[in-house]
Image 1 (cartoon, one colour):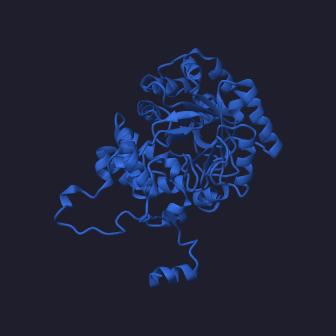
Image 2 (cartoon, rainbow, N blue to C red):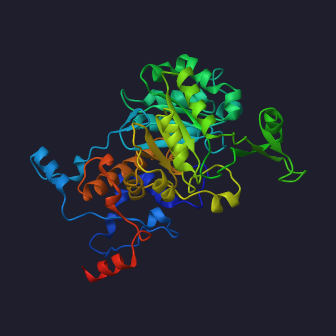
Length: 429
C-alpha cells in the first residue's frame, strides 16, 4: 500500500472487498451460528438521498414468470444478464472506470494498475484530462506508466475481444496539446479505433468542483515548466512555500457552443465515439438533452459526491446537485445515447438505485484507486466481482433479469412519500 487515504469514503469496506471479493457482500462467515444480524450494519454515517432510498421487491413478479418459462426452471440470481452497451461499447457489466487525470494519486503505478485490471474485466475506462500536458504523451517511453500511452497500453494488453473501450478526455489545455489528434493518428491506438472501441470525451465539468477547472498542487520546478499552459497561483501557500496551485480553465459553454463542439468531434473523428462529461449543474437536464440531440453517444454526469485529487473544501461540501437529484432531473435517455453517472459508487445497492433512476452504467473512481492500492494485481478485480454479485442479487430480488429493466417502481424514497401514503403503509391498507 502507498499510504493512500480517502477520509470521506468507506475506505475500510472497499479495501476488504479488494482482499476478499464476493465474500465481502456478506457478514464474516465466522459469525454464522453465533451472531444475530439486522438492518443498519452497513448504513453510511451521513446518508444522502440515494442512500436513503430503498430497493423494494414486489410480491407479484410477472417478469420472473417470463424468465421461468424461458429457462424451464425457477430463475436464480446467476441468471441476471449484465451485458450492457455503455456509450457505444459492449461492457461485461453496467460499470465503467471514471476519469483519472493528471493528479499525483492517479499518475504512475496506481493508474497503470487500474488500467490493466479494467482491461482484463472488459469494462470501459476513461483517461482524464491534463495527462499529456503534465506527464507527456509517452512516445519516448511507451512502456512508462505516467504518460497517456502507458495507460492505453496497459489496458489493451489485457482487453478481451469484443468488450470494453477507452474514452480519452480533453480539456481546454488538452486541446492546445491536440490530445485527440495525437491519439487518433497513433498506431498504438489503432486496435481501439479499428474495433470501434475508442471514444473522445469532452469535459464540460466535474462533480467535485462544479464551475471550476482541474486543480493540482505542484512544486516550484513543475510550476515553472507548466506556467505557459496553466494558471499558477504562487500566493495560496505563501511566498516561502515550495508549493504552487496549478489550475486549468473551466472552459466556456453555451447551448450553441456545446452543440458545435460535438458536431466538430463527429466530423473530425467519425470513427470515434463521442462522450460528454457534465458537472452537477442546475441545468443538467437541458445540457444532457443538447448533447444527446447533437449526437453524443454518452453523457456522463458527475454528482456532487464525486471524488477528486484536489479541490477547495467549500466546493466539496456546498456546491453542485447531489447525484440523486441529477438522476431525477435527467431521467432515462429517450434515444440510443447512454447516461453514465458517478458519485461515491462502490457497492451494489447504490449502483442499482442509480440504474433504476435511469442510469445506463455507473462509474468507479475512488473505489478503484483504493482497491488497486490494496492489491495492485487483483484488488480491482475482486472489488468488481463483489459488485457484480450484489448487482445480480439485487436485480433478481425485484423479479427482473437485466439492468435495463430496472425502473423507479423498484424504489421507495422517504422524500416522495406523502403523509397519507405513510399512514396507509403503517395501517396496512
